[in-house]
Length: 325
Ligand code: FAD
Image 1 (cartoon, rainbow, N blue to C red):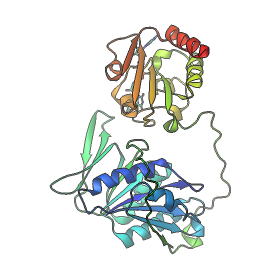
Image 2: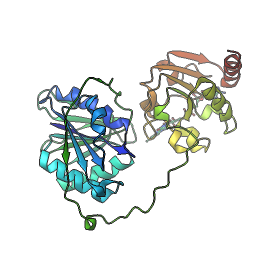
Image 3: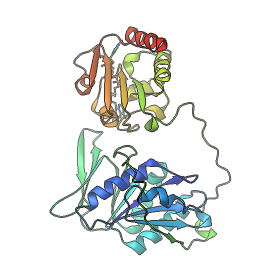
């Protein structure tokens, strides 16, 4: 059985858990066909309706008043109890901030291995082992890792790596409520207050249209033109690591291997060369437009539409046209 941890924040499911259910359903065809989704919190039974639509064959709602606010101690203990009572062959978690915190702690307590930040998962047809692929040596090669003896085989996967499956609104799976044994003494951290970070920009993984800039954009001021274009198109801005390192963009707008993985309907890459680490975060976009003065830049080879030239007059012209329509 494959178990998928579905993370919720303030009663809202994060997409990554649903993406992982979709992948788990595909992988389970080579195994026993069983996919169990697990969600933790307090008074969250209503989430089972949405989870059902994504293909899980079983849903476990782990509820307890001490799980109301996320603390790593309580969530690790609660998940540990579910995992040891269910004995999954495979456990998948999103590589979010909390998934990255829970994954290694759970793996250590379960005395198994963990492959972090995977970019692909497959089942080996002969051994039926999970093949967990992730970049290694600074992204210079892709390593496929197996966990031959210990169980569960554990992996964290970055949000956006797998597509969000189409929900089947007719599908209903009965949820089972698991009440973990938790006490105040188990929790060393007390959450006093949660202060939400005020973001100027939307989460780029949720954008349908992304206007991304790289070193070729030249300055922070020039990014204002990209912002204007993005706004006219109803999308958001993002950038390469070079643009982030220059201080032109905040880190949470970085696309790529050490940034976010995005798959929007339209990705416009402006002054970005298309290094492999950048492509790792955007090559699954539905339609890619690249604007670059170098026709040989790698991004031009994967673009659906490659525009050769100095980006500024091209973007100015685009903005002018969009304002007229
Ligand atoms: P450059 O490679 O310098 O490209 C600039 C491009 O702009 C060139 O193609 C040039 O022809 C074009 N240009 C210049 N002037 C103009 C103009 N006036 N008009 C039009 N085009 C113009 N990178 C990421 O992006 N994301 C990551 O997550 C990431 N992770 C990494 C992880 C590791 C371990 C390592 C080693 C590297 C990582 N990198 C990442 C860095 C990556 O290797 C590249 O260095 C980076 O993507 C380059 O950014 P760029 O394309 O903006 O800059």
